[in-house]
Length: 221
Ligand code: BEZ
Image (cartoon, rainbow, N blue to C red; front, side, top):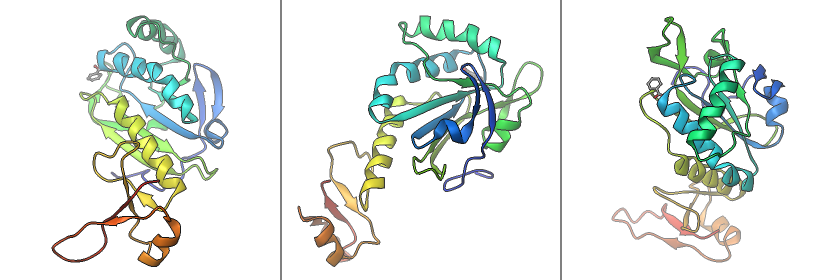
């Protein structure tokens, strides 16, 4: 993906949002923050996605995660559309700000431009991009999804990857395929067996592989 990507610092953009003006770094502060874009207001998949984000508000709050939506439509349009989102999604309130980007500058800077879709006036629109920014004041991108306009995102997966990011930021571990909270994790390859014994006194299990190499080590943290 060209442009802004994993490990990059998000630019400190000046944003107009449904909750007033915000400087992006001040908004993120020291929280994990999800910045997610959608192609346009009053469109079907987007209405379900922003409603799903609202419905998962407690899950995000439990994890100390802030949300920031973004599309190019203006604030008046966002405010009107929020009424539809809340009505369609059983009254779950859209408590997070939604930013506007009429000049299409923010979506370019955040690497969120959808290559195959244009709005009815022929302007660029955002893809279904989602950046999770880390909480360490360095405002680095820790994870990105980039979905096309036709494919809605899965909020269970968003929560799952947040759990993985939060776990792997605390311990020298990684989460294997299909991991979910409570499952064993794998010890990072940079950790020697000697160090692993000290870091994981609860013990770890090494998979018996044809190569007889000992790189696949499971533990619980
Ligand atoms: C939608 O939200 O349903 C949508 C928006 C733009 C292109 C395709 C689908």
